[in-house]
Image (cartoon, rainbow, N blue to C red; front, side, top):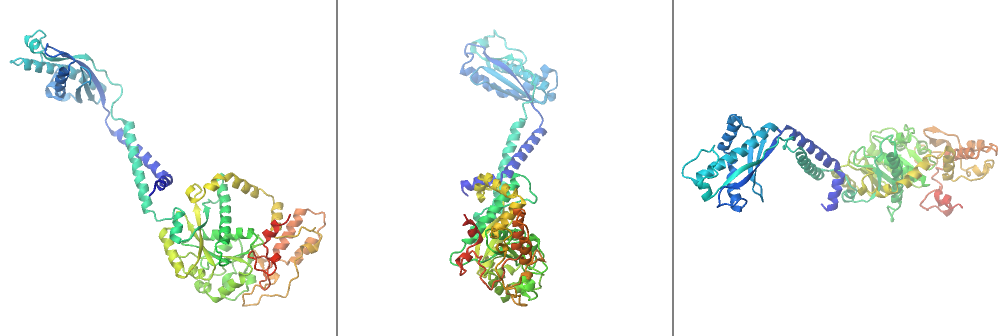
Length: 596
């Protein structure tokens, strides 16, 4: 682990560090509350010389006084304290200590007790008792006969003056303490906070060592052997506020980035059929399929979404269309393909629902009929197939062998690394081609996940997103009409809004997979629509003085009602430029941007 990895780990796991810090401080403070308070009182005495041999303040006098300091805890001193206080020795509660103040001739006696009064009496009594005991010892040392320890030394005795000695003279009496000296609650709480911080760091390191989920985009290249096409942020349902608005704007831009990556995913082989899958359920593959198809259609690419999940279909529900008839009925020969394809609000986006759930979905997806269907539809559409999860069933592995490539969706913080390895193993067995990976549910706050650029330019994305959402209905219809490449001729000119001649006798052959469908066989949102000639004739009868935006809206609806779906003739709307007519092969967005 590098220093940068450590800082990244600390930044991600700040919650554990903060929780450990707070918990440790609370435990330390609670422990300090259980301790008995201790009050401290001090008394001071002076070291005096009692003869000519020892000079007061000399090193010899201080050394001799220091030798008497351990006597403070002897029974003789406590007996003197009890005698002076008029209590029993067993009633003396507290601790005593004495020391010579460094660099001086002062003796400091300290008494610790559970209450201020006891500490005061104990400190004063200990100083006087120590002085008497020291004087008694000095007299015994300089005279052969023992002396009464309670009698003070005689200042004029010949022994003291001849040999010299020391005496402790009480100076400053002790003062009653106003606050306890122990326990030091802030210090104990600080120690507990430090211990909690260390514990939080240990938990964070153990969590990282035991974490088996994908947390960073760098894990994907190692586990799947493919690059990242885009990162889709985590968005809450019905989210409000600036963060939710930014997430929606960034998500839309992320899908555009995925679209660009798919167009340049292969140089040697054309990519026209793409499958979207994931390792497990609930990782966002179906939502990625719908969003990717929408941005492909926005660019002028005729896009068809096929719901290849014949076990748990969700595409029709996401587009709010009828799912009664779909891929299952087409592959079984019950309905023609023209009756199963549904149009959407976008004129370039079509949907083939899953239809009824068959008893043998894997066999249907791996049949020759499905391969023929894809071969015919890819001539006029960029196909996006929503496949089941790889680890759940074998359908995804079967589909991956008949498409040009697949896009793998990984849910950040949810998909396990072992699951990615297993999915890659299954896909490699059928020689599937992974075009790239989409990281879903990425946090916007994760700068190492690639969102630093978006956050720095959030004002730009927010402004463009608000401008798009604030457009009125007429402007939206005008934009839709422009995407459909409508002629700007006056509404009264019927020739300007009429489709080219078409063979009305081209019917769908039952039991086949040709898309030469009659206009009435193409349904929108599950219901039949009138032919374009009937609608456009009613539009042409409008007076020239009618509102222009409403007229363009009607024209857009008329144009949207009958899109060209005959794959037996060149469509002229493909972005790959393989049509015979270069002008017809130019995509809509290219022709629209070429206008002055």
